[in-house]
Length: 93
Figure (spheres, one colour):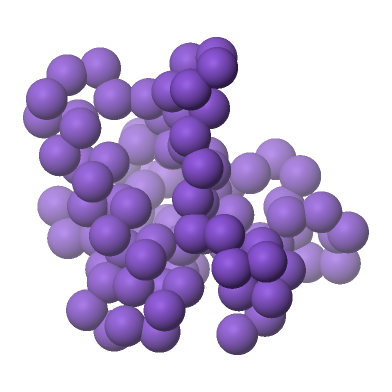
């Protein structure tokens, strides 16, 4: 799909040089859940008609404890599912 093309097949990357936050692509419903639960936010430069990251590009906050690591793992799995067209890849927390 278009997000795969625009990200050149990149599923996610971590900012290990700075603060261990992540950028990744999520399906719309997963992105809404991530934002509503305070785990991240839509990338500020992403949006329709913007020559930057696709709308689905999401900024994930760095986990602070083991419980949050598990949540971030689920979010990454959802991103993998979205980018590979696997319908099982949804955030369920």
